[in-house]
Image 1: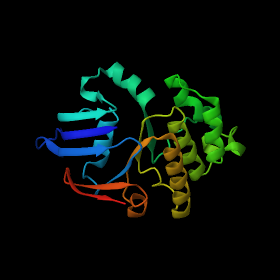
Image 2: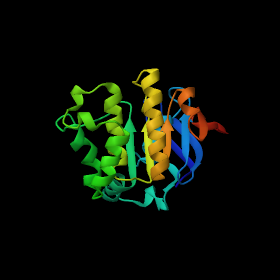
Image 3: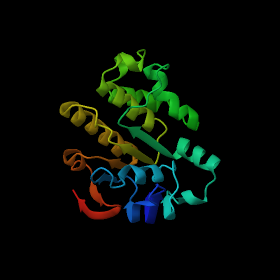
Image 4: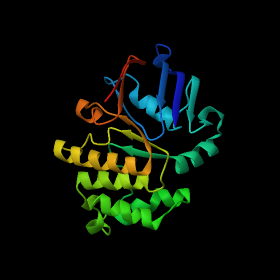
Length: 222
């Protein structure tokens, strides 16, 4: 599903280029899950943004489902993001002017993959049936994150990218939301790459890698 090979990324500063990723190699199989850990500034979010096609590597390759991101135009990348991947962030990023039902369907409609039966299953599994007509500001943090997860999975993407998806939730709500996410991923055979600071969260995923100063320092399996 995902292969990252010898990826380098730096950013210009007044003192010269700042190397953020220094030759990263990463692999994630179909239906697999991988936690990406590391201290602040280690390059976790940078790597996630590169995999999402939101930024370009200086060198190296990123292949997702047989598609090389560096060979796509901006228009091709935008279409690819709509149809092939799902994104979940710590800040939820729901559309305030849309109710829960419309937020859930938003990504799938953009991708041309709206499936009412699958959406109904997501609503039931995520426990959102009673809040479909509410707006994001009327929901708790846990409810908002459930909507964000449902929206990301509604188009049945091959890969879900998550950046601290439970970071704004208390421990009990975090555990509950993570359990629902992992169950839905298993059922849909969607692969997961998740950035997290939490060892508790990382232990729930099948594999774990640690970034240190732009390089992978360790890999372990659950």
